[in-house]
Length: 547
Image (tube, rainbow, N blue to C red):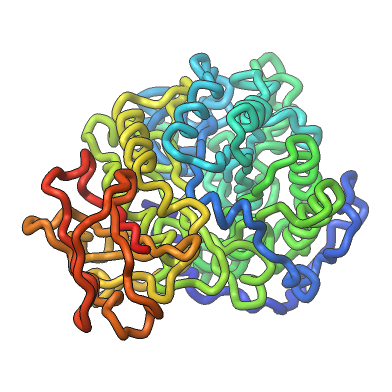
């Protein structure tokens, strides 16, 4: 996937205290930063501490849903449709027409979300065990999915669904007692949409510009009469340097490598839009799909937004109850927010809470995955959750939503199975902390490193009944075994008598969710447990509760 190829090259994170010659502030913006103990600098932001609600929640579900789901052709559609010869471009020609005549603005207008029922979906996610819910507020396509004061033309209350989608998600989440988060991805529209400035090089439309250059003056007599496409596309600027010109597209993601740098007006508008989002919908969590923070380090907008989020929480709740997610963080930045790893996991117990985000399919709905029965299984999700929690992390799982606002029956079956597993084993997940070691077994013997923002998902050997992961709570240890052993016996070396980790002998072992004691023996080689003859309904992972 293009995004995967891009972000895996970003391993060299930008230094925390780097100063760019292009640094500019958002002073004079229509919205202002909330006053409080946090200032927009790393020394001040590093006083942040992750709230207990996030550390205890462990599992969230994400609706990464917007107008790019309307074509049902996967992630980054609003970019790919302008790349001549790509799969998205060919699909667009067949379904909608040429991008000089039917651009992404027209896809937005075509999107109606007519079957969206947020109450039903969020109720399903709560039943599946989610303790927080996150909704996409905007993507790189720059379209706000809420009643946006500062993107007044190109938002979901005006075009497409003509509904306040973030408002609907927020009400549904709070009705279910879930913490609510929003994800913001719009900072990169400036460079991400640059392909919309182009034109075909071949064929009957060669040289005919795509619609990325249109202005309000071009809309007379069209459905978008009175709307300015540049408020969406933001493309009246020189393009970033191409590879042939000495540019580096991967570096341009974090505003280097010959990237066209946005001006102060663009940064101010992003700040205003995001403060409006925070103040109007009061999210508990703010996820940024950026290296460190939005527009960092060419603007202080991201640090101002983080400070606003924290100060507002202190003002309203008396303490910091807010979470801000950023990617590819150095040690100082890691203290200032919660690190997010995309489609990957850390390979150690992290000293600070963190989060992995992944998806059971494509970030934006892709009908091809459904047709090919290519979703992640519930087993993969559950084993990922266990692994992440054992390392002091949370799992944020995206369940792709169709353009019409529903999920398909394959996705529903996966979500429901996750819920059945958590109903039995959740006591070893929620409210836990890492044990002395994260686990043992073959998977730990050779682990794939993260690349850039993450992306080591699926690169390790599969889990088996020889793999164990640990969590602890209230003086008990939960040993998750990643499969039911054929001989019905489990041996855990880390729980040997006289070993480094257990200071007292084991008094009782039971299978989580059953409550009945199991036969066991503890010696210098480990803890040896005899399992019951009847397997659990979902035997690919189970928790031994060790007292």
